[in-house]
Length: 266
Ligand code: MN
Image 1 (cartoon, rainbow, N blue to C red):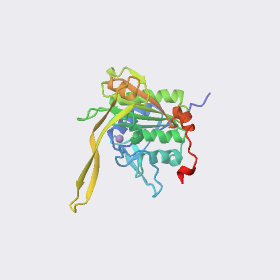
Image 2: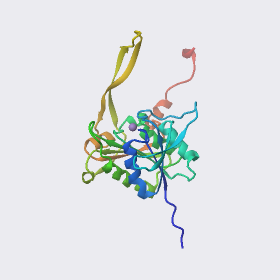
Image 3: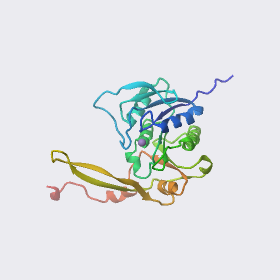
Image 4: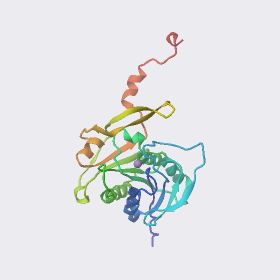
């Protein structure tokens, strides 16, 4: 008789903090797929980007999700949590990292800011399949993560079945709709965000200026084959991202430039 195949070991993490409801929904949805371990930041780090904490020790403490599921929380950044998990915090080797469910979408240039996405990037750096899951939630009211969690399970099952090529990760964005209406998906490319940030300058009680970057929620250019366009049309968007950020199309042109130090540079 054959030994039963080892269940896949899946790390569930996020950037919103271990107690975020999107993480609990993701954990519950993925439980049938394998052995789930949870290690997430102890607070919200949204828009923290990709980080590696080198200047101080990282602490990890035991905690539990709202339904009692045991979990671990770290005072490190989201990507630190992935590194901790991959580098041996858990005895069993990991097979996949799923990050989310983020309560807002992560489209276009957001992938450079998003802790949700950088968790999947960190997984790819360590040679593991990584999936970032974000929900295009309306801006007010209580969020139902159920439909998005079901989509996340489907995508995670497909990744377990097929694997992902090295250096690749998936950025999944899900429209906010009931499950029965989430029937269509698009494989997309990364689109373009339009940020609406403004720089606000004020003065503190000692007349010293301070600055605050803020503004309306970004929009985007809804080109048909992009993540921005797909979500705007109500489709699930699955974007394969790659760690290679080289602008390949411009290597040839750049090689024609002259960067040598000469008389002009003295
Ligand atoms: Mn977030």
